[in-house]
Length: 289
Ligand code: FES
Image 1 (cartoon, helix red, strand yellow):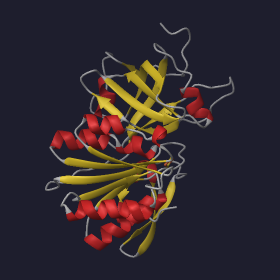
Image 2 (tube, rainbow, N blue to C red; image 1 turned 90 degrees about the vertical axis):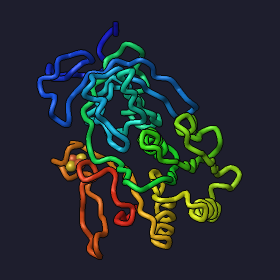
Image 3 (tube, rainbow, N blue to C red; image 1 turned 45 degrees about the horizontal axis):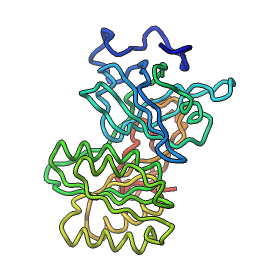
């Protein structure tokens, strides 16, 4: 039993095993129970929660809005959006991989097994895999790899091959490698410390995958530079792509318009809400940042 609840919750929030009064609704408020919250390296932690079965509807690229406990007894005013790292339907668990940096994530880092944690979702439009795609290329950096990781689950369920190019500052902070490989993906690690993450080198790797017929679609998150590279190669070889955009959010469900970003659609600049219209978008329409 938790010594004291670390997230506020309401009567309508569902715990694992509760009767769901609105089983058809897409989004709900849930009280997860912390199973574990372990450091995976100096910067990242891995949170596993037991959740109500309704929360298990989350799919790759979607997110939850998290009511973070306070790290310092001052209020944490807003929920924090976080993309889901893994959904384990058999175990009834959702997982998050996060970098401990702001007050919200420092608060999450204080959670211990047995604690309550309030999450709302699943929110947004996630990744989609189309009929006819046999092999995809996933390219991400830093915490963006946590957003891309569940693509390996989605692709494995559909029998689609994945090559994941994992970019990081150094080998100690390469994220999601085990999850990708555990689901059959081929991984290629590129890092700043030996220069292999340079755009020219990543471009060569992707060109080789295209030549091998291993690139029916591109997916990226976590780096503007890598987005620009994939957009350029996608245009050159007529390869479709999707990008998961990162953005500060307040409401998380389309009401406040704080998360607007610019996109270019058919030659016109348009504004879209990342929380509701995304966070996953057509790669060629994203203007970047
Ligand atoms: Fe409020 Fe997106 S965060 S509209």
